[in-house]
Length: 225
Length: 225
DNA sequence: TAGATTGTTAATCGATTAACAATC
DNA sequence: TAGATTGTTAATCGATTAACAATC
Image (cartoon, rainbow over all chains, first blue to last red; front, side):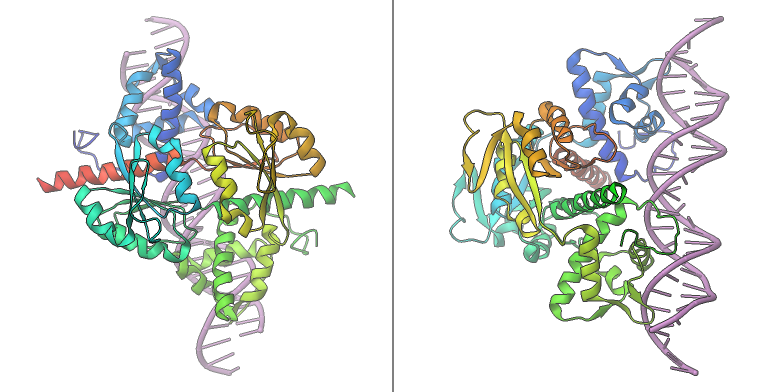
């Protein structure tokens, strides 16, 4: 139970990309299970996302032997295994810090709830917001992050404050025992080892798109002449 | 002007990660220019983000020779070069498709505007929304994507519709001549070559976090015994 | 000139893909 | 058994890092 492999082999460091792909596989499995498909091959899974079938098999093999040679993977079984591996067989209480435009939007966004992530407390430093409730969710002052999250043993948080405030908020979250942070602030956060940060930097993504659009416009112009 | 390098060498394929880092460097340059710093070394830039200085130099070298040996990079000059390379020396008109929770939030979100990305038209298929204006921005039916974007020669779009509708929307955007898409729908989009998609999959990111939290909880429990 | 830092080549590292024995 | 597909090793590919001549 503690180790996926019982042969005593060293547990490999698992690439982060593998983890991200697991949730993509899971999404696909949810679809095919709903369709009534009983088994899929790595080939079929791969085609769906333009990936390589060897990669699918390798990703899964990090966690155990889930397949049947000659047949593929039983969809229902693999789905449950992936849910267990990803920790999705339980609900997660998530703290949201920052109730500006973006924070309010995230609070209303149904995507979190649907996947078993429940925003159960919000922190902000605006006195006009503190003390209110949005639906059932109380808005608390940022100073209360440590006591509130400690008491409730919460491990996940979403940061939606301006870049200038993000590191201070992070320090409080870490002190409170949070070890997984979804960061929307456009800044590099420094955290101790063992704390995982996922950055959602819309600004970086837009600029990347701008680069490609600009380049293809340039290329077009050149070839037009 | 057409090529960064005039020595006739083949233009390298530029890694996408390099592009993403350029906008991170730019953010840093904006800060140090504001501080009045005249020059920075690759070393100093790298330290700021926990990167390697050789990587900074290599990333920049894809686009030309911007540095001065023995000194580093002039901040103001490099900043302008990066803005030009990324296509940020102009405003971008962006179309938003989908005016649900997420779409409305993105429309209100100031981060786009600030960076020169202006959402100037919204598409939705809900008759109760079509025809309205949000601020100055008109809401049009999805069927009008092709004529409207063609006429206005718009190249960038944001998709904030449910996964089930995302591919059909994408096809319209592509037909309209869009070549850069920021996709919030949790699904793999298929696009022709030359069209760039950036996926913002909150669900995948949350699941990745869930994995790490789960694992560290498991490890803690094991070591507790 | 002496010290510093670039631009670039070569070495390293890690991730993806091909290939195939094992086996359902 | 014959056909198919896994799990895994070896080959390939690409990106990161080290090293250093060029040069400010």
